[in-house]
Structures are given as structure tokens and as C-alpha cells.
Image (cartoon, rainbow, N blue to C red):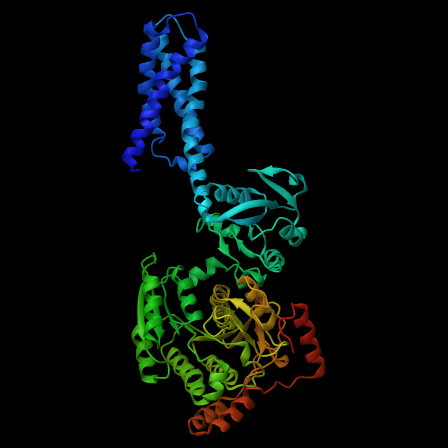
Length: 622
């Protein structure tokens, strides 16, 4: 039915109800009088007719989608009817000595009843027609019977096309137990989820408690996915308050939800003060970390963002994304360049004179770099050297290098090359006006090189999911959190520091695989896990700091500063001079030797540093 036909239909229905209601009430109250000849009733009817349609239009009674009518729509009817009857009462008072108070009062009640019934009948008809179409609905458990849970339940009932049939609520508030909300019973607590899923034949679970902390959310999510039932959640409280998304934006639980990490808040005043109206360069701007850095920097009102990258497709993608946002007048400058091209890098930095450089460009894939050590040297070492020395020459204010936990005691060429890159900027920091620093962290979930995309692909193909070793662990962090902490750490630098991000507790890769299988709606008997053995250059456990680098100072929530292992400028220059002429074997031996060099300390000093470090949260595992 078109909008015009729908409005006309409602207009005719309302007109018939209005024209008949006052006479019906008058006949009920005065059964032995000829009300049809009463002049004042006729005038009152005409008044009701005109007033109702005016107020009905004002309150949008003809524009509402009555198939999804709720209490708010009924309130609109009540307002329109009340004002209509008030106008009729005023008219009678002005033009007649007789007031039909009882008749008008009864008419008021009858109009609300009939007009409300006419609208709500459309909703009843809509829901029954959907049921007649045999739309399949999943038996759904809603965890949380608070305001968010009630809204979700209401939406599920009003929108059968969602395919979710709310069967039970689960809530820890004992006052709600055995009560019904929208006809849905509150049946128990979160401790009983597994039993309740079996008892009520639940097919889906929706977690509707936006106020949960990340740790609480992670624990609850694990309980839910262990039932083998598809689990979804609603946005967190801060996202709802900010208006980014609404409570109805249900999404599937992600592997990030199982980390249980509370995200740190930036010192936004200092961050904006440092980055506003500045020219910011991000190398590797098309990569996972680089692109997220660009997104987060873009909202801090910089004058320009220089997107430097080697791959044109990735730079095109982030350039297009940023231009599609409201960037407060920020200029976006896409630059296709290879950091190995020293002359090109120097010209770019000379031309644009960035105030801050975030150096995210690097080769990071361990087995690939193990097979191609020359490329690790060219990109991670000489590429970093090119950008850093250009920053030094043209007096860039800050240079922040993105490093990795694989630079700690590295058995592989990738980690060793990143550790040597750290040494380059640490030595530059001793004599440069540019403030150099490195930020070291572990794996980021969802990045191109992480196991998460690989596991997703393997699960989609029906398995097996390949894990190197059942005891292998890694640190994990989300891309947005890592990027925020990199920005914050860059502001804390005085020169030459290696900042270490608190990655929380290490996660077993096999547990990550199992959780991803469950989140995908499968069980291990359907998607097998296959252990393949460690690949060349891999470590069983990752570390964030070597014992000789441990420094107890935490300078910001989740940001620590490590004591760097020194190397003389003379020795560094000699190595840099020789690297291009070394064989692959010689490169590995030399870089691994340098990267694993320790600071000599007394046993008393080591014991003191280790004790302080453990008290700060056990950031590493040795």
C-alpha cells in the first residue's frame, strides 16, 4: 500500500470513529431521548471531526508505521484525543448553556479505545502474517534483564524478521527471578547458563549488559561460547553514550572480546596539543598498524597527514577512507615511496617537513624473512636508517619507530633486524635535535600477519586449523589500542627510549584456535586442530623485555620504559658498512650476535630489577 493510500485509509477510519462515537455515548447515557436531533451534539461532532484531524496530523498519527506500534504511539493518540475533547468542551461552553460533560468524558474513553485498537490491530495483523510465512526464529536467551536487555527483547518481538525468538532472560538480580518481562521469564543467574541452554533448548545467546568491564565481558563470553551456542553482544556503554551506535546494533562476539583487556584512556589534552595543526607522517600507512594510526591521528586536528607507503592499493584505500570522513580541514597527502630509496625519502621529508614521523613500515613475517634475510636487512635496517637520518637532517620534532616483542632475544632474522633498527635510532638520539624513540609490543589481533585471519580462512574451508605447538604462547593486543598507546608513548619520549606496552597475559595459540572454532559455531570434532611443529626462527614464548633491559618505571598506564642495550656508533657503522657484502649466513650470525648482547650487571642489580618488574605486573615471560 502506498503512503497516500495508507493515509487516506486511516483518515476514513478515524472519521467514522469520530462521527459515531459521540452519538453512541449519548445514546448510552440518554436511551430515551432523540439525540440525532440535538443541535449541540451535531456541532460538537463537527468540532470533534475538525479538531481530531488537526491534532492527528500534528502528532503524526497518519505518518507512523503502525505495524510496529508501541506505548509511545498510544501516548500520541491519547494526546490528540484529549486536546480534541478539550476543544469540544470549550466550544460547548462558549455557544451553549448546556455542557455534555458525561457524554464528552465517555467519548474521550471510547475514542482512545477505538483509535488505539484500530492502530494496534495493524501490528497484530503484521505479526500474524509473518508467522503465517513460517519465518524460522532461533530460540534466544538474553543475558541481562536491565534496560538494554528489555529494549533488545522488545525489538526481537516487534521485528520477527530478525529471526530471534526471545525465550528467557538470565540475570543475577534475585528480585527479578521468576518475573516476566514482555512475557519472557527471568529464569536464573549467569552461573546457570550452561544448564539453562540445555533446559530451554537455546539456539542463540545475546549478551545485553553494556556496562560490563572488558574482563567481566571476557569471562562471560567464555562461558557462553563453551555451551556451543552462537553468541552475540551489544555495544559497550561508552559507545552507546557517545551515540556512535545504538543498543539494537547486535554483533557477533569477536575473538578480541576474549582478551579481557581494559583499554587505556589517552591524555587527550596533551595529545591534541602535540598533534593539532602539525604535519604528521606515517610510513607503512597502508598496513594494519599504520592505517589505524592514521585514523586515530585524523581526529586530533592535524594540519596534514602524509600517508607514505610502497603499495598503491593500500595507500589508495586509507586515503579514500580518510577523505570520506569529516577531518576538520586536515589535508591528506598520499605518497607512494619505498623507504629503501634513500634519495626519494630525503626529498619527501625535505619537501613536506613533517613535525612528527611514525615509522610503521617494516617486513614482519618471521618465516619469510628467515628465508629472505637480505630483504629484512634492506627494509627493516637500511629503510629505517634512511627515514631516521632524514628526520635528523631536517630537524623533525619527533620520530617514533614501531618495534616488536620479537626484537627481544631473537632467534630469527626478523627480530634481530628490528632490534638493530632500534639501536640505530637510539644512537641517533644521542646527538640529534630530533626526539627518537621506539615502541615495542606483541601481536595485534586482526593484522595481516596475525594468526586470526589464517584461522578464519582455515575454519571457513572446514579445517584443519594449524597450530605449531600446543605450548606456544603469544601476547595479543587490539590494533586500535596498540595505535593509541603508540601515539601516547611518542609524547612521553625524551630521546632514545624503548617503550614497552603492557600486553597483559600471554595467550596459548591453541586456546585461541579453540575459541575461534567455537565462535564460528563449530566444535573441535568438526574442525580439527593439527600441530605442525615450530617453523624456522620461531620461539615458543615471546618476551617484551630482556632481563638486562628491565626498568621498573611505569610512566603511563600500560606503558613502561626499558633500559636499552648499548652499541657504539663505531661498531654500528662498521656493521652497516659490511652488511651489504655479507652472505645470508654471515648476516644471521652477526645480527643475532648483536641483538642478543646483554648488559653486564651484578647479581644484586638483576635481582632488584626483576623484583620491581614482577611487582608491576609480570609483563614478560622468561
